[in-house]
Image 1 (cartoon, helix red, strand yellow):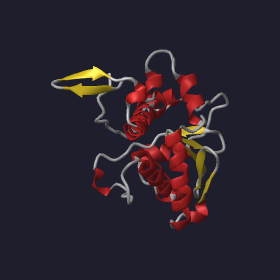
Image 2: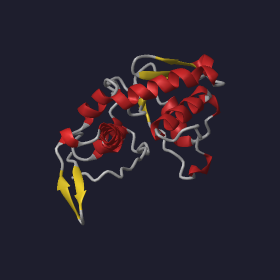
Image 3: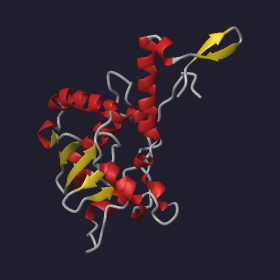
Image 4: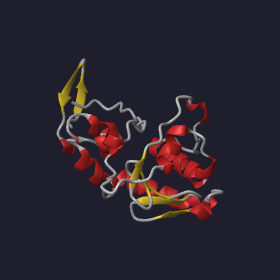
Amino acid sequence: MRFARRDGATWQPAPVAEVPPLVFTEAMRDVDLFVGVTSIATDPQWADRGDDRFGRYWRSSVGAALTPSAQVRRDALARLLPRLRIADRVSLSERHLHVRGNLRGYRIHLGSGNIMMEPDDAYLCIVAARDRTQRLHLPFEDDPMLSTILSKAIMLAADDRITDPTVLRQLTRRPAPDDTPAPARRGRRDRRAQTGSSWPMG
């Protein structure tokens, strides 16, 4: 990442030491959000490209340490969850939101939003609806992943009411003896949260 200062009609490189602190911190926050949502860890379908080249990386990311933005997300969840109707079905650990459904238990990673099902740690793929008018609205829109995680938790807390056949097949699937949570076996992708940046970066 590079910073530049406008000089007439052009941009001239600016040393980091000359960047105002507020501009620097906001730019770094944008970079963190950008990296967080563009990682292949948020897109399990990448594992289907080639001979599972990214499977090990994806699986390690499911339980990876939280980035600073994900840590802020965890703090926000700690304040929000006790106020929700599903408060008695959810709990927070260091890196996951745990959800107790009626059919299974689930772990939602607070960084990637990926879901692992208990007891076999099978990956659960939930595709976001194309109609975004019914999305979960929060009092702030800085973190689309927070909305995604909450939406998944609310749905999974009532997993016995899910009617989508694709999701139901995953919930009732019996793991094979050598089964692993490799996403290449699932065939559909989680829709990634998206963010943009207005900072001039090169």
